[in-house]
Length: 154
Image 1 (cartoon, one colour):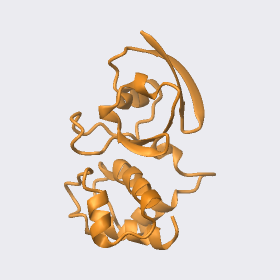
Image 2 (cartoon, one colour):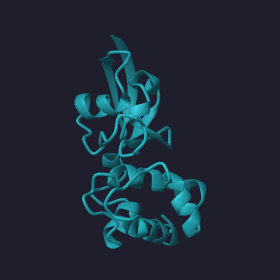
Image 3 (cartoon, one colour):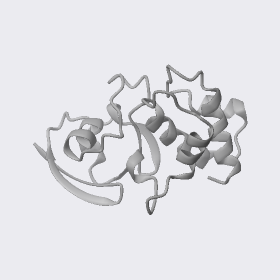
Image 4 (cartoon, one colour):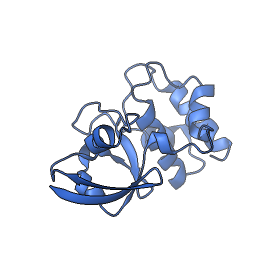
């Protein structure tokens, strides 16, 4: 076992973990952050996307020990004061989800995308979300939501 110290959604945690524990499993099973979804376990779908020190990562591709001393933000940690994050609002208002399985990872990736490019074109949005898969929507409303969040100054 290895002790890790990590800040998740603004709260500091110190836990013993198996060195091979994936960050997604640590978040879900140890901390109860079940908004971070286990999709494929192969880093193909992006459903498990979280922010590690402010940058999006697929948490099924990161070991929990690699997060030691770092800050992780999950979908549960992006809103404030009981309010939805502007990207969450944009997804809701633009009907950018159907089953919702991909939505947490998609939102986390979209937030990171706008951090790098606050005024992306439709092509740049599609390219920026390329590593996150949705099997339901066809992406049209997801792209609309990200564009709406960008216009709102997300």
